[in-house]
Length: 517
Image (cartoon, rainbow, N blue to C red; front, side):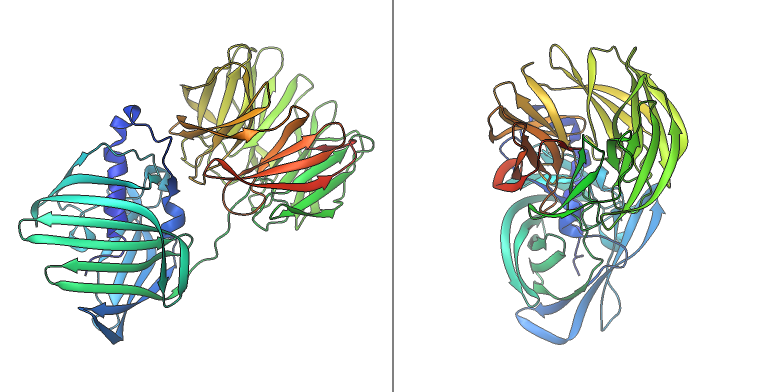
């Protein structure tokens, strides 16, 4: 039995092998796909498949695939994916890395042949793969040597597709065709993976015959995108306003770019909203306030309403809030501060909305502006993006455990382009950089492994319009762009798919004393 994830597992193994050759390969014209979304490997997920062998349906044997548990093998944390049929109760066992940021590949030999089974790979062309993503529309060949089969030549092609199986029609699929050629004969394995579902169909054609699996049922954990600035936990980002007159709050809860208005409890006008983030790890964004003395209050939010207030402490008027991010992979946002006089940075680690740790990761000269916070290498930890005030250069602090792990200079564009936002605009799990030109044009620099991998130009918009926020307002997993016109408060949004403008929306307007936070 050829294991259900083996095609993607072997194919994903090549990510790591080919990374050293990436610098000369352009992926600007390709479509990047998030492996995690299309394989849906989570503990407890279970799929059953109707099995047809040599064209004859087998009505009394189904194939079941279960993500059973995690183990540590060879120092790596892996998912154990077990596969068995109802008759023999036996099947293959795969080991899939739990850290999708490293790619997703088999930790040992193929299937249950053993972790120490010797296998070597020689890949041509060099794989244009970045961490947990792959590129569609490409065919790759590689030689494969293993102790059981000897030398072979394999090729893999990945293309968008749709497929119909007993559970329905899946239009958002990728078809993965693996062709294997050995001295003993050739085999073809064709698999269809549906977004947020996993494997829905597989057809195998080998010298021993044919086999077809089609999804019969699935018991899957619910899919929930963790959108930033989501105050009601519905998986889409929301827009928070504060009145400059009296400090009141107004919330636009967004659903496919359509707003529902509410008025959460606010504080006195002396308290200004300075950031938004998930400070207690409940998956819902909270509100960070500060006053003129830079004392702070966190308003925890539940279902779009304030549920409690916490007081993490103060820092003093020379320190300015520069954003929030999960700088230690703890699942809660930390608070980034910078001292205006010398560029020194401080980070408050936050646990249950309380300051649990303070770190000082370093300093940069004051002509470097903190331009944003995001995960630019898909390692599950946010990093800090700087832009030079005069020449537009980009610099990234890669973060680990609230400390600066490395400093990288990323590719930038001309100095008349300013960074105005950070978000994942192509749904590959890595944050990208949003630019605005002095003349109003918009550009998206797609990132992978702490550097720009492609540049896209979704369009332009007149200078009266300013970028006010970035978030996923339609729940599709890709961040969108929210604009506002200063003169009258009218808003405008671009729905972004694969870093291109796919939709235009006009959510409405508010009087100009209401400021987007």
